[in-house]
Length: 103
Image (cartoon, rainbow, N blue to C red; front, side):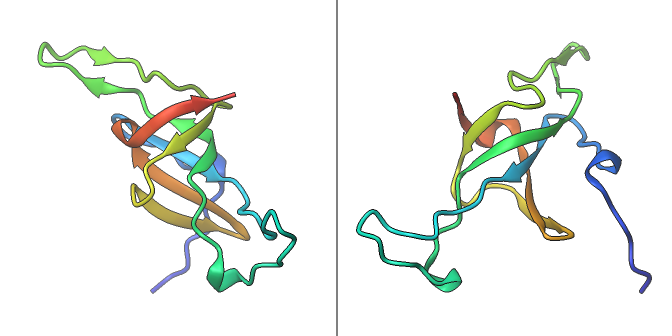
């Protein structure tokens, strides 16, 4: 199988899909204990990097996504597909899996 080289600019989500860069998880607890990689929880906050054109309505028109590139969002814990490009982690998920925009 041939290796495929992807970059963020080459990924264009389809439909109501959103491409999110996962934020770094915390490495230390509030008490100052350093956490190993195996004990860290998967973060649920990330930054929107690419947005699909939107969901199709019953009449064939597109409904624009509520999020835009650059928004910080909170998404469902087990939602989407995890993708690793280089050393960075991303999640490709449906717009319905986004819970909130975080400021």
